[in-house]
Image (cartoon, rainbow, N blue to C red; front, side, top):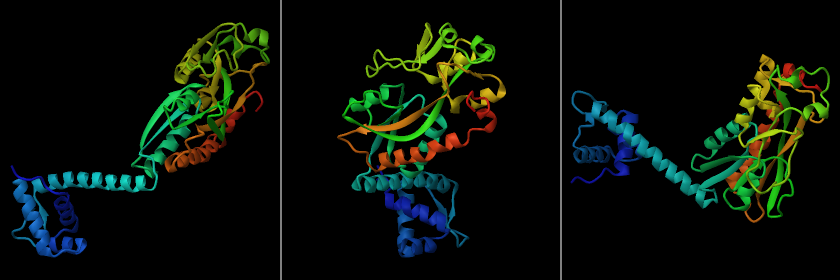
Length: 314
């Protein structure tokens, strides 16, 4: 059984392929040409493959087999680079993994932008993302299920958690255009609002047990998923508050209507980052929070004027 190729041999293979000749690869690697040729010869022997054409040309021309092996060698070099980056990060206190819980009302475009930038900045840090509603993001922190949480304004939050405001968003009462609350003439009084099914995000944790937020109807349907709530409102099966970022296109296209409700005006809500008091965020976690602070204002700044004019107070 032949020994496996070494990482050094694979590095030499990639260097020759990139440089175009054994002598150029030697200069790149600061090695004699004979050493480079010897490494490639040994690799060919171990693999039982001819990797370069050496006859009739001064260039190191890859064979078909050589091209396939170079692609594999590059992947191995990338893995090695990731290992080195991870090791350097760990020596500097960088987290090996970061786990976060995000409230369902957190603007999705912001979350996407933050995570895309995070992947580019910390490619060696594994990320685990949990999505929940209301107290679920706090509960996961308290039980040490996650390192950080992103969510709404704290309600009777534990002293074991630290809250840091990172931005704002808006919740808007919505219904289908033909819903009775949408066709009502003038501002809808509480007595009328109470008579129509309200769709409400529900908290499966014990953090807000017995508490309701912005619930005015006698009859409610409750769910933990914002997308389900959105689809039910869009289909006409009730009314409820939806984040502004989620419904701009639907309002402008006439698929959803902004409601003018006396008990439920357009509501700005603050977004916070939470961490445990006994576990400060590491470099990656701290960077993530600062990136949220940067991205959240951009959502509010890009709300179209045509959409803002549909708001009761706009």
